[in-house]
Image (cartoon, rainbow over all chains, first blue to last red; front, side, top):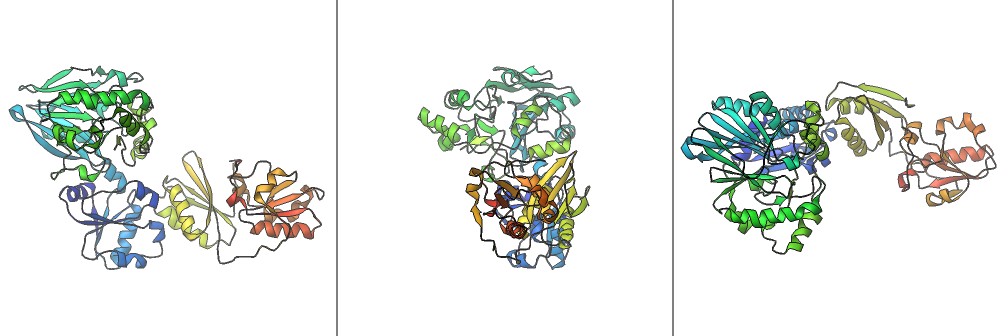
Amino acid sequence: MSTQKWDASQIAKKVINNEELFILDVRNADAFEDWKIEGHRFEYLNVPYFELLDGVEEILPKIPSNKKILVVCAKEGSSLMVAEMLSEAGRDVAYLAGGMKSWSEYLEPIKVGDLTGGGELYQFVRLGKGCLSYMVISEGEAAIIDAVRFTDVFTSFAEQKNVKIRHIFDTHLHADHISGGRHIAEATGAVYYLPPKDAEEVVFPYTPLVDGVTVQIGTSKIDVGAIYSPGHTIGSTSFVVDSKYLLTGDILFVDSIGRPDLAGLAEDWVGDLRDTLYKRYRELSGELIVLPAHFMIIDELNEDGTVAKRLGDLFVQNHGLNIHDEVEFKRVVTDQLPPQPNAYQEIRQVNMGKITPAPEEQTEMEIGPNRCAVR
Amino acid sequence: MSMKVDFQLDAKGLSCPMPIVKTKKAMADLVDGQILEVSATDKGSKADVAAWAETVGHQYIGTLENDGVLKHYIRKCTNDLIEEVTFDQTIDLEQITNRDGLILDVREEAEFAFGHIEGAKSIPISELDTRLSELDKEQEIYVICRTGKRSDMAAQKLASRGFAKVFNVLPGMTSWKGDLTKNI
């Protein structure tokens, strides 16, 4: 039987279209436990490739013959080896080109909705890492919020849409992934904004992003307005786009809230987080659609693959917005924290411009789930 | 530093799965107790060599990293050759640091380098015959290895050469909970 090579975009379609898939993950048990390709209807078998060097006979009974089979490893080589062995044993299988590395890097642009005067808002879903970036476009101009480091994805998307990137924002100094904002700005001449309170150690020039900063995109002047909303970091800032969408950065997610400890100051920032979530956001319209900078679990995806939900609904359903006792809130967001993201301190250094690792090292730093939330 | 090993395998420049495929092949040619050094540049090989060794029962000793080259050290173990521990003068691992004698570590140099009890003297069992003059017959000697088997043989050998105050330490380094001194 044949061995097919699938790329990450094909898997992304299967996630978004809710298709069935059987994944044979041949990485180490630890790596699989920590992080895998998530799909609503995916099934998994984890057997490290080095247990299959003598043959795949033992696992054949565990691999269904009526489902599509995808073999996955870290970079590609081992999955190809195992896929070929399965294929020789008469199974129809595919392997993932570039392995989990390419899955971690893949971005799927999905339209969230239309804006006033023919504008559009796109969400770039990085399924493998749970990162969400945004592009607001209107009449030849664009703004980008929380761009990940694959700058050519954004620049070629802008080209394809025939828009010029004017403004680039980071809602905060990211700790889980490397920002592409500064580099897109350098390549396009766009203005790069960072919240100054997060940028005290930053070694490159930026435009301060403070409460009330508003830019207008296109001739219909779609507003992208900043709201200071600290708590995940001291500088964390949200955006209201076209009076319709609330981009919350890492403060509020669909099924969780931001963690206050990644810059080492959980105790200090927990009060800010409380104020942002329980006061500032309460003053906003419940009709705003919340668009976060991350998702943590696949269940947070809507049917069309976007991650978006009415603020009013989140006030009812999101556990983190419903802890009425302040002491209990403080306990939840400081005591029950999940492990910190891989290499988060080094990633912060990269985002400050202090270190510039080679692309391959950047990939290694970003491996694994994002872990910016506390549930 | 260069470590004393029995075989060296160059897997530099190879990407997964080849370092492990080659390691598996090379290990097949070693005899029990011998040490293989695998040089590799694939970063993922570190976790994989360790996990593979555990799966098949070999002893993963450790990895050194220098200038982008990883050197993995693995000792071949075949578990079907279980030898009985027969030397009757034994001492409990927990007691040895409270006594004045010499801790004699008879594991291979690489094993010793990746972690030993502070103050222990290293003489791999294969070198014991030629290095007896380094030991004092008047001193108590606590012979230790990884599990107690090699130290049992070494203790017997020392006893036959007239060392009366020799003890086999049980269990071996696998059960040591204290600090480890490394010289890597």
